Image 1 (tube, rainbow, N blue to C red):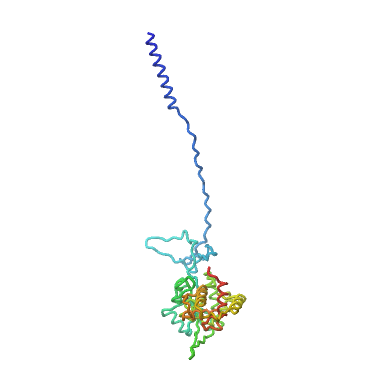
Image 2: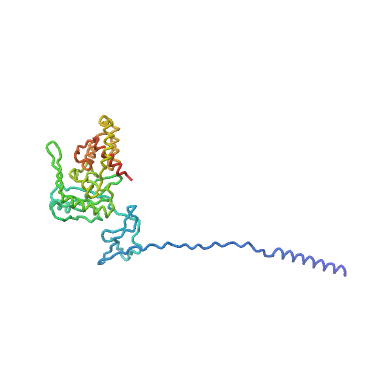
Amino acid sequence: MRKTLYIIGLSTLVFSCTSQQNVKKNSYKPKNPVAQPKTVVKTQTPEKPKPQITSDHGVEFFTTNIADPTKNDNTASYGSIVSAKPAGYKVVKTYFPAVAQNFRQRYLILHYTAIPDDKSITVLTQQTVSAHYLVNNTGDNEIYQLVDENKRAYHAGVSAWRADKNLNDTSIGIEIVNMGYTTDAAGKRTFAPFDDAQMKKVAALVKDIVTRYQIPATNILAHSDIAPTRKQDPGPMFPWKKLYDEYQIGMWYDEASKQSYYDLATSTDFQTKYNDPSFIVNVQTQLQKFGYALDLSGKWDDATKKTIEAFQYHFRPQNYDGIMDAETFSILQALIQKYPVK
């Protein structure tokens, strides 16, 4: 009996201990709570409302600039908006216009026709050359538009200025009726003058174009500037300084700066080193730096002489002999200082 009670008591004790161990093993231990990330509510800056596209008889226009003018960007359209019309689909202007855009028209190139008014019209409208505008010399207040400003006219041909080539792609061309030049028996050229009333037309037209397209002074050029080995127009009689002084059109040097460079040039052995190849390369480099497309041959070759002549047509028209004298060199240095490549 005692033995039986002992066994029962021992079994109860073992069961009790086992149960307690199981309770301890399975007891719940709460974990440290994990902090949930807070939801950040982003506040979007409301987009500024864009000016409306205007419509006139079903033709759409957008004449406001919403881009950054300091970067020469412009979203204005000088003419109707040209849009695709894909079959079966609708092109919408819900997000028009994007601010990242600017004008194709980056240059303005001036020419003379070398033929009279009536022939100029025929050639520029019926043959394989053209310009956006033709300024006649008939004494009226008319200027003829021949090509849409948004399209390429065939006026520049093989051409280059600074880093750009094929300037038909990026320019507006203005042809001016003028008889060009005649050549005497010795080969000397005599250029025809430009009429004052005609130059007022040119100035008003140029001013309007360069203002609308934000064309810088460095990109208002002669045909001879962008094609010096082929072309002479508009020649040394074209009044570049008058346009600069009276209308703030184009480039011109500062007299004080030019004089400073001239004094420096004449105080050194400018003439004695004239035929030194290193001096010639320096001259060619300076012409290149200003904008002309010219190889560094180290020789006074035909291309270099014609480029100097073109430079003189524009900036030293009193003497356009194609020789880089101290005055021409000083003018070149003054212009490079005033209009550096950016």
